[in-house]
Image (cartoon, rainbow, N blue to C red; front, side, top):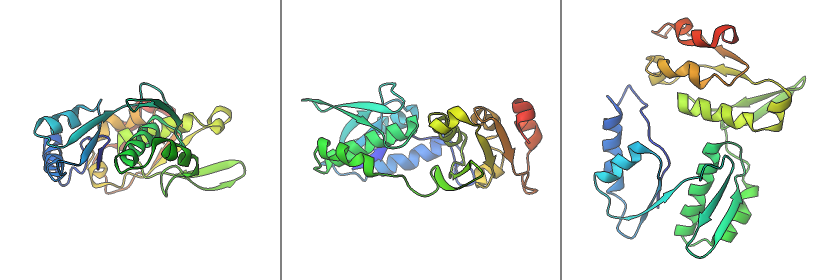
Amino acid sequence: TLVLNNLEFDHGDIFADLAAIERQFQHLVRTVPGQGALLVNANDPALARVLEAGCWSERIGFGDRDQPTHGVLDWGLDDWAFTAPLPGRHNAMNTLAALLAARHVGIAPGQAIEALPAFKGIRRRLELRGEAGGVRVLDDFAHHPTAIAASLQALQETPAARTGRILAVLEPRSNTMRQGQHGDRLAASLATADAVFVLADPVLDWDLGAVLAPLGERAC
């Protein structure tokens, strides 16, 4: 049972371009046996190209039907509504993929949906590390513009965001980020934060000030 949720360019120190990453995923798809299943985000163009190169297993497309935190599964007999246990569209997609994967290995949809509220998340994915003076500190592994934007969007859905501010603190640590390959998208990914703090590591070989300039006085 293989879940393909999204595919973008990253790991620029290893792969020359997105096509090189897609080629690796094509190899992965070919390892899934004929009786297996591919659960694929039907709205991702890179994944569509991967499957066009060859797919010999059952293919099940999924999406969130434009609902930010809810979804509906059409099982052919009944619709099963669910609420994602974590905020954000990306977590709704993760939840939908997990339910489909559970169904493929024999878990009844109703049983899987009933178990969702027990899931409290994992380390370094909007993980609450502590609170002091009314300030909640969350740790997130997001190191790619898409992931950064998704995490901030998820925070916008929380009750705390409606009564306070979101301060984003970023350390560009991934090799791709250090090389500046996501520089053209970085400011936009941070745009929903009320203030942005980025570590100006001396090893960065790109102009951090210029990249963050679109954020104006919100960035430092």
